[in-house]
Amino acid sequence: MRHPVFSYMRWAKEHGAVHGIDLTVSSAPPLPLPPVRDYEGHRQHPTGDGDRLVEERIATRYGMPPDHVLFVPGSTMGNFLLVYLLLERDGPVAVEEPVYENLPGLVNLLRGTVVSLHRRPALRYRLDLEETRAALDCGARLVLLTDLHNPTGVHLADDELHAIRELAASHGATVLIDEVYRDFLEGPVSTSYRAEDPTVVVTSSFTKVYGLGSLRAGWILCPPVLRRRAAELLDYLTVVPPTPVAAAVDAALDTIDERLAHARRSTMAGREAFGRWLAGRTDVDCVLPDAGVVAFPRLDGIADTEPLCDWLRRERDTAFVPGRFFGDPTRIRVAAGASAERLTAGLAHLDEALPRFR
Image 1 (cartoon, one colour):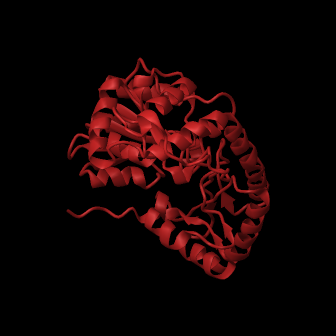
Image 2 (cartoon, one colour):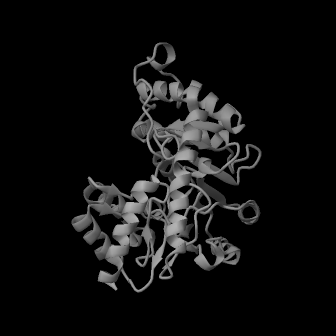
């Protein structure tokens, strides 16, 4: 069976990283991993689904009953499980645009049809509710979103989420929100998921905010019946999460608030530096991110940023992500939450390159 290629991930693995200034990274600076070791007791001989102890701690952190949490190998796996279970075969799925390519890619992989919900910069990337209504009226029973939005860093506002939740409920649809960046928002951690309301389900992980990407550890928040179906599907894929990973996450949860504070503090200086750079350019259009590590500027006079990104990587050892991977080739995705020093140096190389490609 042929499958669509996840072109951004192929590019990132083959061409994205550089030895110099890497501004493709979309996570907080990593912290040391907790000890990765095997566990005694239930983790040596796991029974049940996910990991009971980790799920209980995630549930407590986000104010959920434990049976609404499934520990999975990363948010990417969580997205796959939920799209597989919620997609009506050959049916339409409403997907935000610009978009992290994995989301429409999963719809295509599972033989659905993507219907775009345009997040427009003129509206600060808020969703067009009438467009959302039209997609639901035409039969979409699944809506795929990110919060913070990837690639712009814009937060899904409370009134916006409320309206989308009501629209979906009135059509018998489900909204899947990938919240892998959401904990960058200031204040206590929270989620769009409500245990009493099956309209919105959520995926997230310990990757982007908490510096544990190499563990591939994430979770799903969903009603218990859907959790059970996701766990049954996971039986075919990984059976249970690796016990050393569950043990490491359990240890990391002991200092999770310190990791969160580090992530928010370390990315703020970069966003401020990015804002200063943007204020000094009249030929770059960008909505400043609400929080997090990414921004999505449009470069005036450049129809396709990929040749520019290729030149920067080859000639200046500096990497940005071409916007075509998110649906807009006139833009680039920038690691706006990188260290201020690294970001300033990379943006200086971009300043140098822009006249060459106009």
